[in-house]
Image (cartoon, rainbow, N blue to C red; front, top):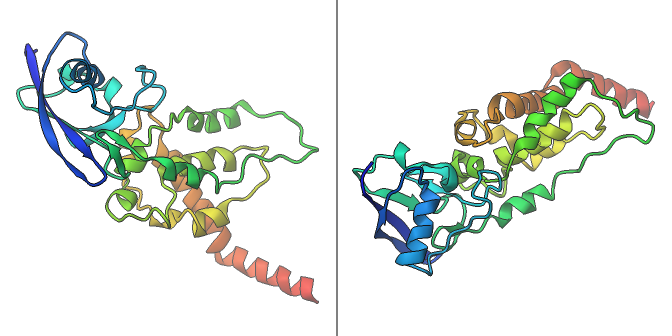
Length: 248
């Protein structure tokens, strides 16, 4: 490993900015967040960086390292080509506040649209272990929003007002697939969260630091539920028939 590494760090705010170069001495086991802390301590004390646990569990330190969305606390320097400068930039899908800190408040507005878990008062609180295992995967999400950042619907097409994004499809999946929950959210998925925009490229799954199978285990089953509820011709006919009988 090189004795020093060059880092090009974005410095600026929502009005604009530029990459600035910093030299960082490299020690064994260092991660990108260590380098950012070194820069804060020795060259740029005003460098804005969001972080908390430094253990890959809080999701706070998300950024783009050499163009790829990552947790900086889990990105080891010995996995990067240090013969070239390491570029660290803020997440592209969210407005920049300052330097590497972005405004992710949009995500919480989306979250408020989702009806919470609800079970009938008479439900027996007993579940098969297979049902527990199925929804437990979705509880691993640390809300780093890397999946939101890499999703082309948000990143390239700016569909924030029509699309909920993979993080919230994961949340809805955890509710919809819970055997004790009795709320249907397919209308929300179709009309407000815009699940139809997703073309299942699996880019969200590739960047998930918790290895959640977002596309295969959450998004595709939710798409199937929307299709069953709104586009299945047999169900459509039965709904029409039921409507006529109710009106008779």
